[in-house]
Image (tube, rainbow, N blue to C red; front, side, top):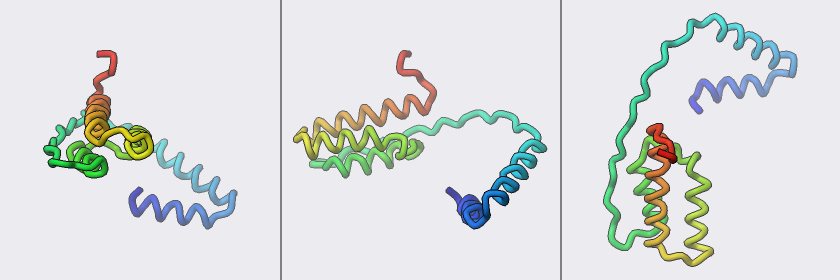
Length: 120
């Protein structure tokens, strides 16, 4: 969320329900007056794959993979990442195994980012 969005939310929270409705109506009016933007071609970023460090921990691997795949949204991968992390911490799965699964998971999310379906 950028500073304008934060400022907008702060103002909206201070308004009563009628004021909020007026702001929403005005925003929709302004949006309806805009000319539709020409669809922009999606620029696909390539990952900068960093090598694993010797004796790398699962947390270290997560940091490395997030840096390698900086174009991916970490929030979208939170469930998968935390599931793998808990398999390591709570389930006793070896770090090497979990890290290998994380690398596959990051690659799968990258393929989705590129628009490649999992059925292809």
